[in-house]
Image (cartoon, rainbow, N blue to C red; front, side, top):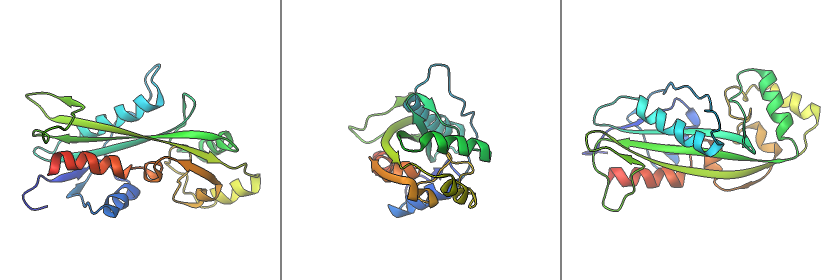
Length: 204
């Protein structure tokens, strides 16, 4: 990355770091972005994912650097499921998701301090400030019907903690997933096609 701006990943998620490595990208710095993730009144899941990704990119102050941020929202219809902090929350999510399909929306935002390449479409541009460009990936995930014994075994691993919808597709919960229509990497937490497209627009 010689001669290029520093790249900052505004997320402490190990899975997002691993996904970036999959496409040959290594951030110069990793920092957690602390924002209020409470949905606004009437806000749809897709708009929530985009807003939070943008907010995380904007809250990390690293002058001259490119800041990459993302946020994943799991939803059933317009209902946004929480990033489970308690086992009860996670159990409620998994009970709701059993034997049905749901949507996973992952918003990606890249903030840069200079002009984009010719032809790149900026999500927002201010002549006196940074440029923030966003993309959204959507996937439909179907779960099988799970029995109580399977749910108990799942909770014995503790991987639900902090996960949107109470599960991680790359973990033990993969045994519950019957199909994914859309980007698998977006369900894990970072849509690689959209992320590569955004980074190409500001780093080349």
